[in-house]
Structures are given as structure tokens and as C-alpha cells.
Image (cartoon, rainbow, N blue to C red; front, side, top):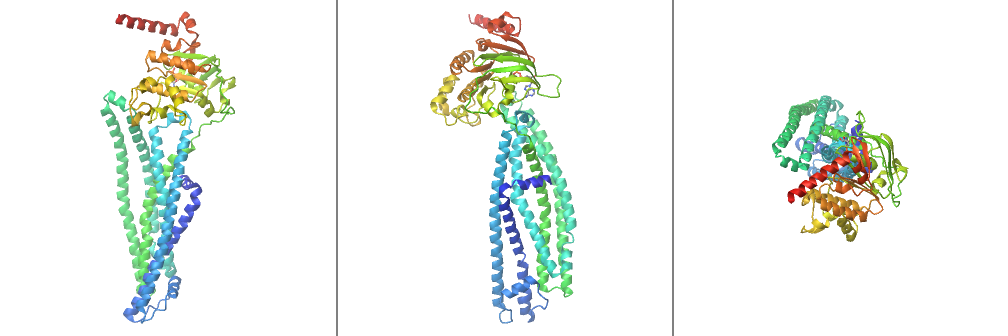
Length: 612
Ligand code: ADP
């Protein structure tokens, strides 16, 4: 029920338009109730005159009396003219019905489209505002399914099902009222099966809803498999593991099929049952009104009108279950969307937020401990303390999993430390507004993501309007120039899904250029040149020296050539700092650094010897 309420909230500012459209629809449906009365007048007032020489003697109800007042008095001499008048009355009713229905349809469609667009926008913005941890828990296939399939289900609810409910309710109430004012007993007989139809529809609704929840969960898994497979198709191909992937997909598809079959079984059982109940109701309505006609309590014309009303009252019942089952799906979809919308957005706020203010780049970690899994016994970072002066070039080294990237993640406030304190320019890091802080940090990852657009647009991602010279400047510093000229379209080369796939090293260089474009106050290269050759890495470092002069930079790297120039090198081991000092100082100590140095020197010597 909560979800149904939320579904209506989606309408937002368009709810009044929608309400007006609903009223118009009700008017249109009530006008439709007048059509059987035209039939009744034609039979009682005209046809019976023609057959028997006198009209029916039954007292007309208020609606019929009103119609008789609108047309000239019917006499044996003016039967054809009277028919023409009745025809004109019918045209007026039809025109009124069509125009209100048309207007209602236009307003509903308009409000629905706008409301759904707003929901889509809200959902996407909300997803953007979620913390990094959220995306670890929520598979992207699941999110995609909710942003597309579920939104469409909601659109169907607002644009079609609610309209149907209004139409059916008005139809049902109108037809029942029209019968009731003529003959209450006959009217009740005509709706006597309604409670049974409603109860069976409710049971169907609940079963359908339960199955739909399962269906959507399995659909999410299927979407996630497709999405993951397409993202990692190169790995699949490289391992020639297509059959494994196909089987994985088939298994999941099989699970979905089973739910689909159960749904079809439910439908094939329910629809004939509901059809039968509806037909029983129609027949009861006809027999009841026929009985009262034979008794003389209803005229022949009234019987014809009752016949029409019996069908009108039964028809919405036939659709009730369908609408209910679709509402069941919509309420599930709304629940799934609310799950996202109710999730806490990342709190970006912080008092240091002056966009014009630059960060000097003094960084201090004081006894910082942190663990990703709060239930785990061990920490991923343990008692980490170090200090970086503004403008210093610092290198992080250590085995994979040692905690280097975690330090960076904490510095960017993707996570908060469990213990200890981080200071930036001598201010606690949590004083910094996250958006401001991240805009001042330039982080380049080892496996950067490039958007499927041109190289130029990728580089100018943070400054789309930037002048060509600035883009080229960043590209030059990141050594993009050397490979881009070999491509026929140069900077207009499309990358990613729409175009060429760049090599790992080329991607890293474009990503570095993109970061340099944002003119960061602190540059962080998280193994960001691991895929370029040593010579290119050296060239990039020389260019960066100039570009980042006076600014703090942190380089995470495995090659000694990349780190030995640093003002200080921090070696991490299993979440703690194992060594700290300059290249020369660390070489004097026995430890990880010296070991790596010896290995790399030995490898270089071996390579040199093999060339001689
Ligand atoms: P490094 O950058 O030195 O390779 P990381 O900082 O990435 O190491 O990882 C440190 C530890 O934290 C590792 O044990 C790793 O498994 C764990 N870790 C890293 N990222 C996450 C994450 N998002 N969720 C849970 N554990 C993580």
C-alpha cells in the first residue's frame, strides 16, 4: 500500500493536472451511461408506437423524462422526425463523450511523461550522489534494470492502469446507479457476483505480486550476467571460455523461465475462471431484468437498457484482475526504485568549500587505522602516520594489497578512518567539502575508464569548453601526442565502444591528460604509468615535473625508476608503514626497498647481457 501511495507521489506537481484529467474521464464515462437510455427511448417511445400504436405506459425515470423534454412530443405522426431528434441527441452525447475523453487522454499522457521524466532524472541524480561503498554492494546490472525496466512499469501504472481504474470505477458506479434508479432489486442481481470476482482478483493480485518480485530479482541477475559478460568479453575470449559463459547465462535463463511458466500457469487458470464469473454475472443480470419485464415492472426499452448496463457493469470486472496484476508489478517496481531513493546519499558537506581557494598540499596522517569490513578482526590500514610537506614529491611502494590505494581513498574521503586523524593544510580532512576536495585532487588510476567519445572530449572531460591550446598542453605533458598523431583522426579518434580500443598504456596517458586538465593542487598517480614503457614513463615524469612544479604529488609505482627521484619514499607492508626515507636512505637499510632494488638491477643486468 505504501508503494501505491509512493506511485502517486511520482506525479509531483502534475498531480492537479492528473486529477483534472481523471475528472474529465469520469465525466466522459458518465456521459457514456446515457447511451442505453437513447436505446430505451427509441424502443419505448418510437418502436412501440410503430408496432402497437401506443408508447409504453411505464413511468420514465428522471434521465428519460429529461430526454423526453429535450425532444418534441412523440406522436404517431412524427415518428421519423422523433427518430431524427433522438439521433441528434445521440450525436451530442457521443461528441461530449469523445471530447472529454480526448482531453483527458492528452492531459494524462502529458503529465505521465513529465512525471516519469522527473523520476528518471531524480533516480539518476540520486545514484550519482551515492557513496562509493554503495556501488560495491549494488550490481550495476541491477541498477540499470531499475532505471529502465522498472521505470517503464511505473509509467504503465500512471499512464494506463490508473486511468483504467478510474474508467472502470466510473463505468461500474454509473451503470449500477442507472439500473438502481429504475429497479434496485434488478440492479443488485446484475452485480451479485461482484464480491466473488473481487475476491478472486485479490487472490490473483497477491500471487502475481509475489511471483513478480521473484521474476524481477531473477531478471536483475540475468541483466547483471549480460552486463558483466559484455564488459569482460575480452577476458572471456582470451580464456576461450565462451561455453562457460553461455552455460552461466542458460542456467540463469532457465531459472527465469521457471518463474515465467508458473506465471503463465497462474494466468491460464485465472483468466478462464474470471471470464466464467463475468459471464455468469451478465446472464444473471439479463435473466433478472427479463423476469421483471415479464412481471410488468420494467418496459421493453428498460430491459434493453438493463441488458446494456449488465454488460457495462461486468466488463470492468473482467479487466479488474488484469489491472490489479499490473498494479502488483508497478508496486514491486516502485518498491525497487524506492530502495534506491531511500538509500542515504553521500554527505558532501564540509565548511572548507571555497572554490577559488587552492590547497597548498600539506598532508598528514596521524595514527590512521581503517578496515573496509567493519566486522573483520584485522585492519586494512594499521596505525599509519606520515607527513608530506606542501610541494613535495612522495612515492608509495609495497606489494599489492599493502594498503597504498586505501591511503588515497581515505585522502579523497571515499571512506572515513576508523581511528586516527588526517590533516590537509593542517585542517582536519572532514572539514573539507567532499566535492571541493575531490575537485582539487587529481587521481589517475591504474586501469582508467574512458568514455566512449573522442580522445579530445575525454581529455577535456572536466572542462568541455576549454581552448584547444590547453587541451594540447595537457596531452603533451601526458605524452598523448606521440601516439595520437599515428591515428588518422588524431584527437577526434573515437575510443571505447564506439571506436578504437586503446592499449592500456595509451588509456593511461589519456587519463593522465584528463586529470592534468583539471589543474589539481595535489596529483596522485596510483600505478598510473604501469602500462607504459620505462622510456615513456621517464618522459612523462619530466613533463610532470614542470607541470606540477611547487605542487604536492604522490606516485604509487613498482618500478624504481619511477620512484627514486621522489623527495621521500614510503614503503607499505600489510597495511602498515615498513620503511620511509629517500632512495639513498632506503638503500642503506635492509628491507623491501633494497630487495626490490636488487631484483630490478639483476633483471636489468640480465637483459643487458642477453643483448651483448
Ligand atoms: P594496494 O593499493 O597496496 O595494492 P589496497 O589499498 O588496494 O592495496 O588494498 C589493501 C587491502 O584492502 C587489501 O587487503 C584489499 O583486499 C582490501 N581492499 C581494497 N579495496 C577494498 C574494497 N573496496 N573493499 C574491501 N576490501 C578492499
